[in-house]
Image 1 (cartoon, rainbow, N blue to C red):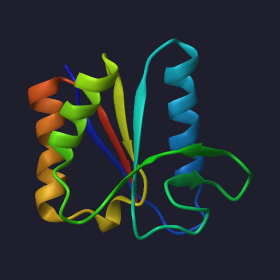
Image 2 (cartoon, rainbow, N blue to C red):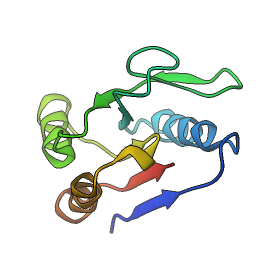
Image 3 (tube, helix red, strand yellow):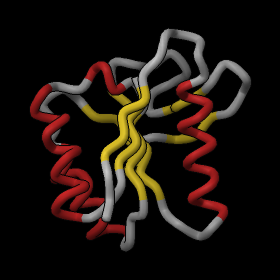
Length: 116
């Protein structure tokens, strides 16, 4: 049974590093992840999730109006099995998007790890 996790802390606490480490752990076991990052966070480039210690990965950008459940369904249809959705800078999610993350868990049975 999949679950929705929300990890929160102050700035410079290592949340993005932990997200990228989680993605790596899934990927080294042959499991596919989807990393989501808000479009307004382009500090390291558009669609790039990066930590201050140098870890980085490409992420799928989303806007405030995007339906994250539809985005996950489209990703599944295009690329096959999806084992985890990871969300960077979750504080920028809208209320509707938070509900969509819970629907990813409930309807698609995919765990979601949100960091913010």
